[in-house]
Length: 111
Image (tube, one colour):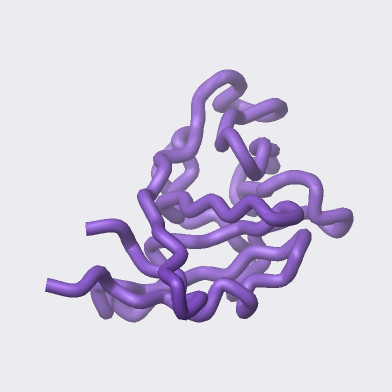
């Protein structure tokens, strides 16, 4: 069985993030963030209370694109490690989601 395709890797610009709904629940449950050549995927849930992170679609990062932000609590997370660096869940981390970039450039959930 093929892994779930999210998008083309180039569809996530540097310093940006994009949410996905791979299970068809009606809202993003996974998001991918790009920092340079690094792509990371995280479960869209703050470790503090499990609430979705963005205040609007794909608004996962601060204005500078340096931190993932929880809109509910203001917690800041490192985009590459997922570790909370400021806020009520300091030291906790986002839940990683395994992804793969295939030879055609497609970004997929790892099986």
